[in-house]
Amino acid sequence: MAAGSAPPRVLNVNVGVLGHIDSGKTALARALSTTGSTAAFDRAPQSRARGITLDLGFSCLRTALPPQLGPGPGELQFTLVDCPGHASLIRTIIGGAQIIDLMMLVIDVTKGMQTQSAECLVIGQIACQKMVVVLNKIDLLPEAKRQSAIEKMTKKMQKTLENTKFCGCPIVAVAAKPGGPEAPESENPLGVSELIEVTKKVKSMQMFHTPVTYAMQGDRVGICVTQFDPKLLERGLICTPESLHTIHAAIISLKKIQYYRGALQTKAKFHITVGHETVMGRVMFFSPAPADFNEEIKENVFDFDKDYLYQEEYLSTDSKPSEENKENGQSEIQLPKQQWALLEFEKPVTCPKLCLVIGSKLDTDIHANTCRLAFHGVLLQGMEDKNYAETFLPKLKVYKQKHKEGQVERVMDDYSVIGRSLFKKETNIQIFVGLKVQLSTGEEGIIDGGFGQSGKFKIRIPGGLKPETKTLLSAASKKKSKAGKADTNKEDESSKNDSAQPVTITLLFKRYVFDTQKKMIQS
Image (tube, rainbow, N blue to C red; front, side):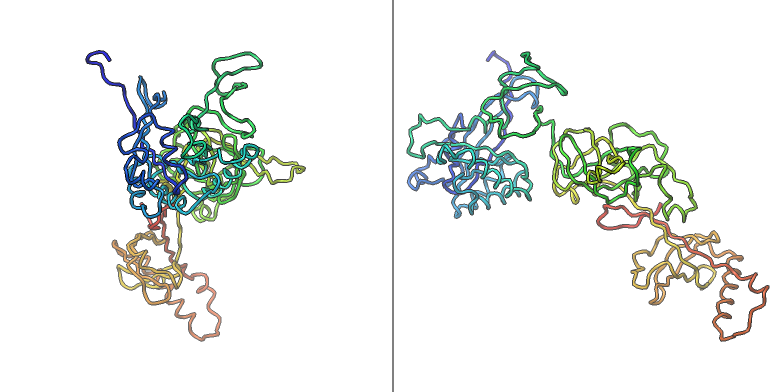
């Protein structure tokens, strides 16, 4: 190294090696490592005497720093933390798990998941976000049946991990120490190079029988990959590392396909094609707040700081006015410049960001003269956390506009009235106290509390009742009183014509769909 020059950059990643006792963790750590510490590979006398790992072992593997992790020369250092597998050493295992970035769960391929394997999996769920499963001791499988046995165990592990955060994690088959502990050191490990790569090296490429040195998205190429059985892959994706992510839900911008008949309803299920996968997914449509319907929206960007309006269906020229719009006197549908949907997938999908999304009804009769493709859009935001409903959705400020109507029953004094028919008898009126209401005569009021046990409530009118409102309510009260008497005589015709109209009470508020506290918001 030249005098004064900076040392090469080293990026360290701590990798925990966990698993059941005698699954071959220490042998794997030894096979992977380029350097061992004084506490590596069971060097302690007690470990050698008992033939098991008793404490944490530390060693490291160094490799060239991949270009996607930063510019310039450098090294990627994996510090391997070899954890004990014996049940009595669970405290040591937990201690080791707390310092790791990535977990390797070592499984004896001849035995599958064992007691401590399951415990280590639970610890990994708590302590880290990424995992690689290593199926060890494949040399013990008869060579003629080895591949089928590995495939069978791989499927079992995939099933085991299906409902964990590690669903879809890499599973690699190795023999860290072929021949067992007593075998000579000259025996080379099997599959360890694949484990170090968690990628494959391309040996050569051809495009229509012509050798090429590079390929890009959209090219059709034949690829020769080292140490890879093509029978193991039916369909997959070859990509730059970190360019794909596996998601459980997504926010998309979308447009309805004009040839699709019928409405796109919120909560409906569609076949969702994302990247190269098609899965079932449930949709929730939403739009800008009404005041922002005509605002220009930035392309391929979603703004989490804005409020959005929940829609029962995708708004189009075919849409019918909702009951809420009718109540607000809107007979025509207003169409925003952009609409979005929340997609929740029945199983996770792997795809790039900003990829094309297509929603279809593929279960429609193929002989029917109808378009099965319903909508298309762009994936703006994927949700990788399986618990996205708790960790992510509360950030999405989609609200429903609530509209309730009741009537004034009678006047208490110049500054308060009693209302009815706004709430059900069993409603907890206390949660509505402090909300603003408006009378059909123009006065603004505030809900002050319940009145009796029948759903009635008291409204305070800070500006006082108008004289004409009191007259109207007084006339309505007299009519009600008269109607309540047991008088069978017909009323005078002029009395019918002069009958007072009820004074209505309107309560408007909004409630955010993903607000766990279900708060009611008024502007």
